[in-house]
Every structure is written in C-alpha cells, then in structure tokens.
Length: 150
Figure (cartoon, one colour):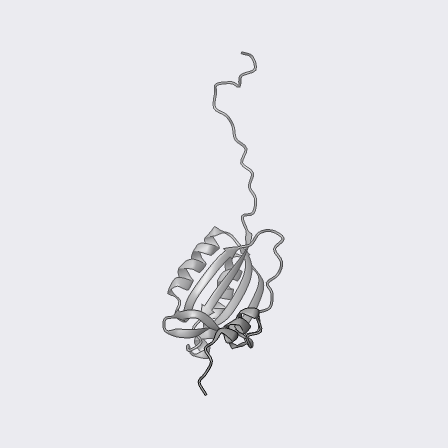
C-alpha cells in the first residue's frame, strides 16, 4: 500500500483573510422621543460603525406607519445604514442597540456580494385599503350585494 498517506499528523495551512462583510442595519427610532435623543441615536450608531468598520451608506427614510404597534406606537422613524464590519462590531451593535433609549427595533442583515443598493422608500401616499376598488372581485361583490328596498 504505497499509495496510502502517512500515518503521522497532518499540517494544515491557515489562510487569513479579512472577515469584513457588507451588512444592512435598519433602526426604528421612537418618533415621540425628543429631537436631541433621535440625533444622539443616529450619531452613536454612526460612531460605533466607524470605529469598528466602514460606513458605506446612510439613508433616512423618515417617519412611517408600522404594520403593527411597537410599545403602543403606531409610527417609527426608519434609518438604514450600510456598512462593512466583522463579528466584533456586530456584537457591539447588537448589545448597544438593545439597551439604547429611543430605539424601538433594529435588524442586522448580511448582504450577498454584488447586492444592489437599497431602493428609495416607497411613497406612503396610496395605501392598498384607500385605493378605489377596480378589480373584478370588487365589481362582482357590488353586483351580488342585496338590493336596497325602495
């Protein structure tokens, strides 16, 4: 059996590479908090990202209605940050944002390489329930409605 590998310990080569990956951080800030507090949240997040990574983009999407209330608040101020960082930065962000006053929710999402930039926020003007019913279902429901007595 001359083709079998030697029975001794194998050496493994370790390749070091940068573990900085691209992430999205969406922060929902309490819109009822004072303006100073909202500004402090934004500056602290930017400072944390800059100290341990690279801030790629920052987008203020403004105050928008939530799908469901969080802490009895129907709206939140949306802020999107794109950054490159490592696991230590993610741990610090997660810890700090969990206890930071004025932050309702946050989510960190790792982006795949080659992901497109974030789209601009959708216009909150025309909501689905406020639009005129123009479908066949709405027309059929109107036709099937009981006739009003005269």
